[in-house]
Image (tube, rainbow, N blue to C red; front, side, top):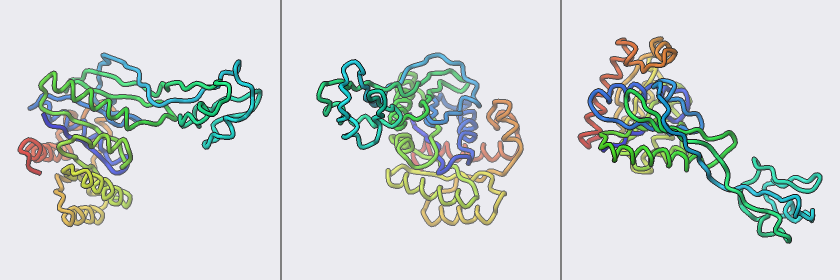
Amino acid sequence: MKQLVILSGKGGTGKTTVAAALAHLASQEFSLVLADADVDAANLELVLAPTLEETHEFHSGQVAVIDPETCIACGRCAEVCRFDAVVAGEGYRVDPLACEGCATCFYQCPVEAIRMEEQHAGRWFVSNTRFGSLYHAHLFAGQENSGKLVTLVKQMARLRAMDDVADLVLVDGPPGIGCPVISAVSGADLALIVTEPTVSGVHDMARILATTTHFQTPALVLLNKTDLSPARAGEIIAYCEQQGTPVLGQLPFSDDVPQALVRGQPVTAYSGGPVAMALQDAWARLREALFSDEV
């Protein structure tokens, strides 16, 4: 079983579009389990039209709660809170969005009027798609610990792949280089970095490539919308050559992509145009790199 994670240094490069297309192409040859690790803004299901099978609650972290019946309004909790999460009014209460769950107020309360409650931080789902099972999640607004939820989604997808003896776990990773990305990269056999020929695209591709290098995850680069700026595209290719990172392919800009997304289809299933053909060529090279253990 192989694990492929698709990343981008920034949002809007076409990462999920590529992930959906690769799911379509790979499913014609291999058995798949899919995971959408962008738990803050999951959208792979918009293209795959899944049927929801299971819903599970996600609890992570703790928040302080003051019992107004027991509280003597001494103000000690407000004094020791470093995050200004204790709000004074008619008595004291804790702002759950500001509370970091450090429990300092819990230990300092002289009358034990404060308790620590586990936070209901989100939900994760199991769905069925025409390309394989999909594991995805939704982190509630203002919640932290997205890295933990990404790890959970990936772990459940991997266990499903082991049970089904699947050939490939395909992970649509989150953008950026933060904790969710690190969780998505963990355990991957190969990372595919999708970038675009813009100033921020070049900069953020270099950051995510440095991240995969740090965690010793082999990486390939796929250049999307390459004809929008040939000069920037040349910068990306030159940088990849300097870093010894292969460029898997170059995708042209095409109206086929938004038209396919509006219809809820991977672009490779919607059209046989230039983008679809370029993705087919990229998949052929990616398949060889992934399953021959040569990057």
